[in-house]
Length: 270
Image 1: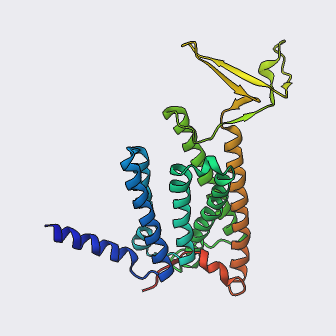
Image 2: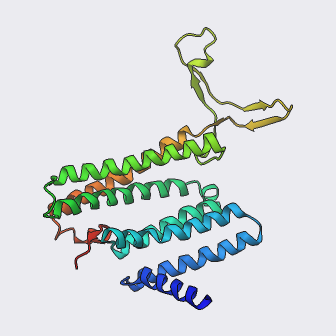
């Protein structure tokens, strides 16, 4: 019975890596090993939430190949490696190893890359339809790039909705609150007029709870995620714009910008 399970597992792994380039296989196996080591370490310390994140990461590693097999789409090796590294950087390094807290630009870099990758995916989907004879829809290079941009921004907005819901209803802090020392609001206008009152150089704020607990926030007040959300959307916008421009140049002259083929999935041909 155990031999049958072992054979099934072996055949699944072999099928998962079948036809892959050596570099892709090396990156995939290395990252998977690191995730497993991390999962064991987290389990030994009883951090079961992190264990779940490790399991989720292993599942996400299989998504590109499953998409390839189900939809008959060929992911270039370069794009696939970037996706694996992105997942590892976001879940293992960002969440478990707290790179989001240690490196203040870590979240910004990942959201920029996310905008770039999502634009690549959106571009590829429409480009595949454009080049297939069975489809009658044919978009110009400009509209193709515009669709890629809109697809990327839509994914970015949906992700921010998810972060807000997780913070609002499950009391996470995915939007990453921060301390700021300036506030401008009409709510602070003593005369209740529709005029902004600006308070700058805030030294500290004090929070009192019903349990008589007193929390002091030095050098400002706690801003609840709006700045982080807008920053994430802005860098997503930059990533989407960059790829949309590259995609436009690629469509109008595929031979000249052949390097971009390493980032654009294609339909598998029998």
